[in-house]
Length: 198
Length: 172
Image 1 (cartoon, chains in turn orange, cyan):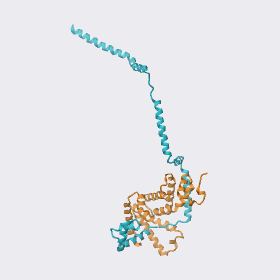
Image 2 (cartoon, one colour):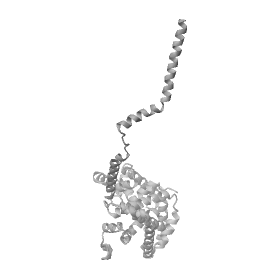
Image 3 (cartoon, chains in turn blue, cyan):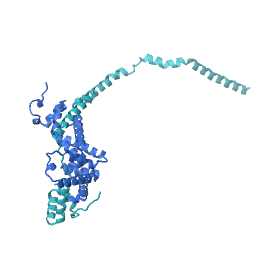
Image 4 (cartoon, rainbow over the protein chains, first blue to last red):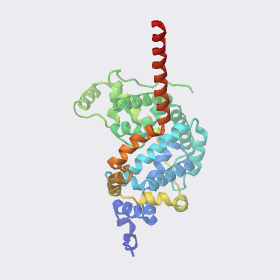
């Protein structure tokens, strides 16, 4: 019988590297543990790009499946999450490219109606504030959607996910200077669109 | 979409750097230069404040319930199981290949090829005939066409006879 550290105790104590090695050896439970570990991060990254709960779920799950099929190619030079993150973000960029139109109205319908009762914005703000927040959210979504694809991508990767300019340049396969220009133009456009709320 | 003018404007030369400054992408001298400028420029300070506010407006938190995550995990299990079922035998075989097997297979292939060429050379080389047989094979085509050559000799003789006959006539 082969050694399986997942049987010994808490899976959370097993490192990513060991889980990857087990998964490469055909241990599905090890890969499921990796999914469990990173599903929330993956989902939120996908949500930044899709602005849709179901799309974000599907996209992040597809990224896990792609990682699973390509696991043999993972050489361990970077951490599993770094490697997986690249797969996910590239899929998000492909998604953005393939999406010619995302209904901005659907964004708020999906998001606002799914906010859990425990979420502070659902009960701790007054009705007026809630209406204002909704209006801002709608306008922000429209403004983001109106940005050219490269500006929006650079902005999301920087503003939402906190990547460095160098990391963004690598992901977008462009020069750092170009990323800076995209970012500046995105901020300028958003300032114009959302000035009334600043 | 109606575009509004931003409430404040920054100095043109500093504006791009203010965005990078906001995101912590300026270091060393550039950062110090921007900070020194901000101390006495109200417009740039306002721009920075506005940028921070607007960047925050675009962020949208989503907090799915535990039931959502349970579904997520269950769906992933099913999808992984379906993927495993779809994997064909050759994919499993390919996955089983380790990096060291590729040069090993390549070396084996080269050795097999070299042996095949070395040993096969003897097999494919045409057998050499003994000297007497070679001589016979050279003469054989002549023997087969002997009658032809004899006819040619006769024609030569006829030409000679005709020449001699014509010479004799001229003398007469």
